[in-house]
Length: 324
Image (cartoon, rainbow, N blue to C red; front, side, top):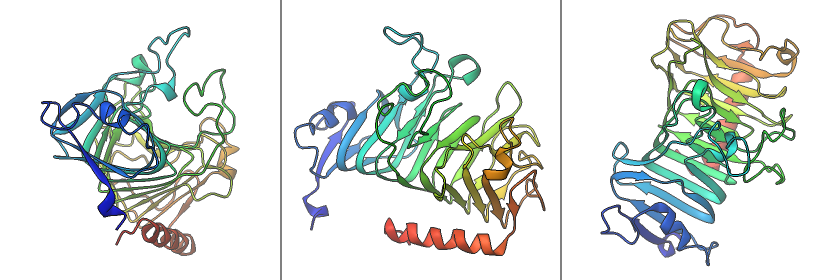
């Protein structure tokens, strides 16, 4: 019954909908942020940076590859009164609030290579519960940030942005049949997140090295799980790491994934600190393809007990999100 009461706002750049941009449609909900709403976006290129803080919302595109929300903001761009924008003010789309569902569209940040533009988020996913299905996320460095932030920054003003001084609240996130593209730490943050049947595309970086993940998982939390995913991009063989720990308790696990020859034999990087190898919870089970390996630089490979624990967590999250 509640779903039947959800209002739908049509976004159409041609002017034939309720609003021309998602930003305008979101603003129309400002006085009733607690009411469930669905934003249906017609095909087109939407050059905007929507910022959403609503209790329960769905964003759905007409066509996955032809409904595009895009911006070109990099962390090294100037910011009024400050030297630079910084990572956490660079996002194309900010998902805040309670329950966020995003389906069937493309979100990108076209700022360019991080060596010049700096970090450039396509999505800042901060809602308490995030579900993305059939979505393309395109960027370079730091494409997808899965909140929360770590407790402490490593450089002054490093967390400048909407959650800099906010409590660090857990988020639960689920990405299904998504394509996520980038090069340096392009999936990062402290969320409990599942990536299910996704295509992960490491994209060439001028350094010749790519890091897929950079988790900052709080101690004792599940972290990232990639299940039935495919890693295939345009990087050189043996140049891609599955991840590195942004913080010491980082957790990331790959379950039954296909890894291209781009993935290096070591698998994991310790972020210039061997101590991280003692605390980071990295592992995989059932990897296939030329990028698989019987052992990695550190972390577990093919531990049945650990894989069973990951499968149990996967089942819980699928049930929580109502997925089959």
